[in-house]
Image (cartoon, rainbow, N blue to C red):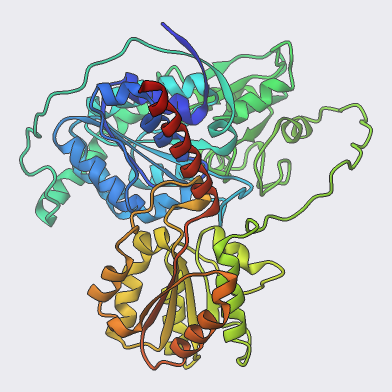
Length: 541
């Protein structure tokens, strides 16, 4: 079969195509975005009529994928780790309903928080839901695990969680493709009550999930992704989870590790292999990119008889992602002294693009609020969060998707007024609409600024679900039409926009201001594409 050079994200996408999916669902979020984009930009899915496209949020994506699984067809749903929080209701309950067609949920974790609010470890969700979890150590395993995951899903009729991390998602390696599978035909569940989670049905489904836990354990015990490598030096045993196995191997260029190593790629953890490692070795070192899940598990398995080293005892740094040097340090390896790298380029913090419309929105907002005490602007997740930095220092919070509106409402409920919320167009339809409805129902005196640049700018310019709909959504939620203002954020309109901000901020009720101007990056790409199309049309003529 064909060999390809793929990102980890792309390997998962190609694996899903080759494994016979009928649909892929996602919401863009680094480091998971490229999975969907690879499918959307590939010619194969179009020829195979594979459904692809970004959803409004992770919950709707999860539920749509579950709906496709209900029909007997294979589906995959992809999100970043914090997106799994949004999808958690449907995700946890999908373990109780089970799956019909194969269903894989990919969660891309971001240790070191390169573009995230936390260092959440999605393996917890797999344990919480009591379903098998897969964690590849390289791009080939990421591809292979998609096929394996669909097999597991359809064998036991449960969803499967696949957990990857940033470095795997965004690094490339050679991947050998497997023979392609055909898509499933539509076939509904044999049990017509399987997906009806009324208590009487849910109790039966839950008991069934408990009954097959031993089968999940046996699958892990025999999994090709859980491998015990013997070693001659039993003073130390190493547990390497997912990509940490790669980091371990990079410290041994000859691939000759003197210690026994248990490589883990499938959960629940294989107890026989873990028992062997513990019995044979004097100490255990646990390498896992994320929380000390396995480190704590070993302690609960075996008590306090032997020393367990890892993140909890400080052998491995408690926060941040692993890398080969951190692993080498944990092994006690001595590295030759290196000369300091000369500082050729001065570091600079991220900032809004020159000419970005958000700049002019913040300038007008800052001036409108100049007569009030500081700390009144509740913001959200997006490139506009950079308004927290100099020279703007225009926002005061950034917690999670949609929190800007509800936090502003809560501040108003506490008697803190005026309170302003800043949210992006895509984030508004993702998680902001329900908060706006709460504010309308309570007639909260807040001003909601929906920065509309017609794209999901922070993750690469994907299509925004809000485009062309924001005013009608706000009006339908109950915002008075005369207090829904659309403005053009540009320097020439500064005075006019600033006065609109001032007026609506003083209004005793819910007001919405929509600064609308296309993102500079997507505008440049659009113009380039249009120019290329015109040139091609001339050639064709």
